[in-house]
Image (cartoon, rainbow, N blue to C red; front, side, top):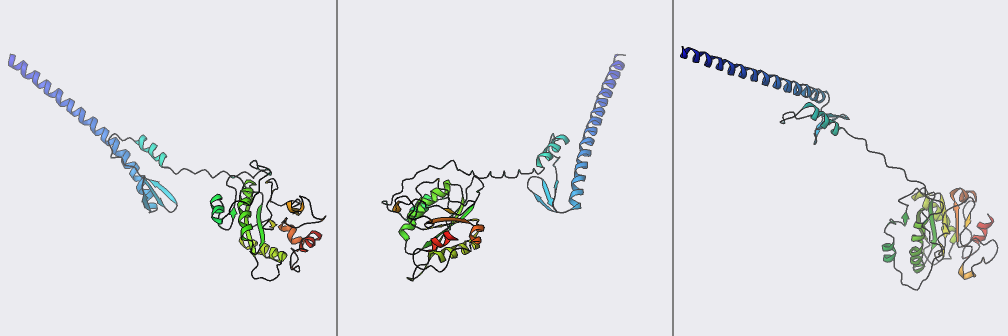
Length: 296
């Protein structure tokens, strides 16, 4: 009788263990079925995208083809879930880069002006020093403000012959002044070769014509190479009327030599220059052309 009871107990224990094993097996099958169903769905999407348009695979899980982007996922990692891969996909979506903010217009009166300047010619000046002092000026003597949109594009035209020492000092002083004035500018040295009689006005006309081949300038400053402003508030740009910038020179006791004097440094917009038909070409030697342009 005791042996019979023991046999029935062992039989029940074996059946219970078998049921537990069967239950565990069913649970595992359900879990695997769920995971593989998810992977099959995502790989179907990937294959559809790849078959619809073939392209090269980029690092980071994107496929670029025909201007479109497709994404693939690796669901074979342990503990991977659909939600985690969907979140990863959102991170891979291309984000639109914000467009650069447009620069504000440069102020009419730049805040960095210093006013009256000390101008002296006793220190030795070299072109190497000028270049070192102005690293932001590009080849051809060009500069544009990096932090604002200039109101004028100014071509500065200098009639020139045998004045190398004056030119070094002019560049030494004018480059910092023009940068503080927040203008876009280019400097053009118009050199007359040979030893024939000098024609300043014709050189200025040549300079105007050549600068238009080099850039879209709308303002033209015509300056002798030996005239340097003593105050950076003397703004080198154009106005509603032609502008005379050299109204007080030290060699004339800081006053005009005569009424109607328009020589030294003057500025005209493109419209103004064309309206008066430029400078006269007939004046050889120094003097006369500035009075003619004043009358015009």
